Length: 263
Image (cartoon, rainbow, N blue to C red; front, top):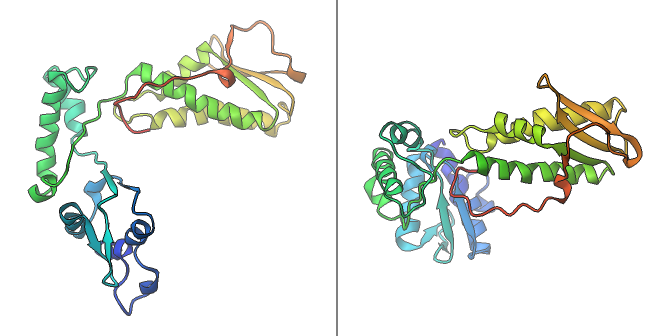
């Protein structure tokens, strides 16, 4: 973040463009004080942002460019950071940490200590000292990625349902999505790309070619060569000679709280 962009948060100084509009942060909190503010990847912020944060964290208020005091005492501030991710991925594995355990386990506490030391290399002590809690997220497991895949697949199926197309997938295709979308280092983002590439792109090609129309029932599978196949049974009749499909449209996914990477 450049230094001049800090004015976007609290407003431009008098005489500058945008002075009458106020700051994006201060105006939002002034209008809705009971809110949650997320600072994503805070380590990339300009040092002036941290000076601003010190006032918020210490006094619970912030003065905007017009001299008005904005109350942050009823605002929940959440800051995310990728600092320490290399420690979790490399250092933790090297010395035998198992991040499958919960927060009460000694392994979690030890890896949290390593991450805290890493944070001290990036952030000033007075900033870290004003944080109420620091939470270290462990890497997603394959089982958790599979549960997230069910949610993402259901979203795709709901969109197609609006076009009167019934879509199902086989267990083989579901496993293929999880296999290509699982990366402990990057969380669930590769999963979204895998679904787009394997499912959405394949469906879009068939729809543009007129092979899939409204009222069709479609099953997506993986053949013996590992290729994704889209099989169409017209007028709601499912294709024959296929493994039992998984009707994700009716799947009720009960996700327990995942202490894992961001989705």
